[in-house]
Image (cartoon, rainbow, N blue to C red; front, side, top):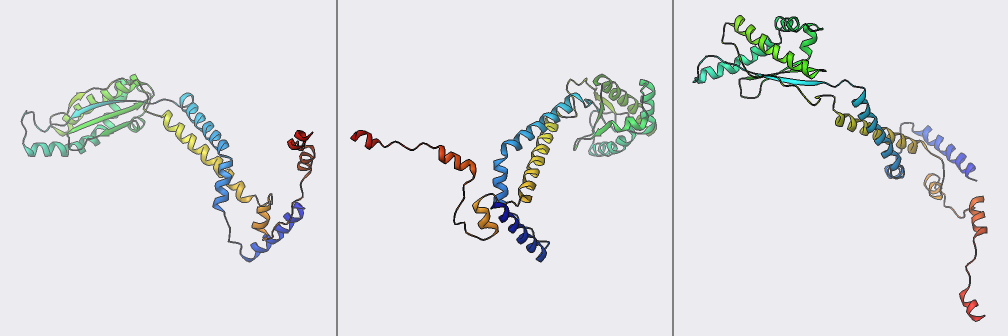
Length: 261
């Protein structure tokens, strides 16, 4: 009986698609119920994705450590400076930022430390930051070895300070803070990648459930018959399983008859 109804529903669906191929009806309430039924599966897949992200980050990705050195830009070797000197020092920070990562400076650092990389490769690992309204330059170096990161950032600060004083004929910037050996990785973040894995697993599983719910057009209940065919259900023929359960069901004992006896 259900097979006949399914075939009838398929024919009516084909006719509807022939009239308007671009129209697709999506029942949001049905999708919500489908997701609610599979919520445990969706959460399990999301947890597996989060665990995979954490495991890959912890055991497969190379940890990166950072070390930072700070330099102070000076315009005069005096303790008291005028407003013009302060403005000049602030403007020099932009020039110093370019000079610190220039090729001569980085090549000298590579030579002094005997690094197995080029100046271009080293430049990708160097970041210069100038805090707002200050004359301080922060040089940060990223490296898989925390000790090497400290050595590189200290050498860049020393070489660039001498280079700037020589080429620009100004007072060399003073190193006010040397690099430190990092004890914790900077990247990749285990928490971040775990969250990304959890989110990707959740979205992937939820998308599969939604697509299955939308594409599933078979008739399973009496409500589906009324919904898709517009026909009221007059009677229901139980299947073999329901029939066996009804047959094996024990009748309730009549307590009133027992009392009379």
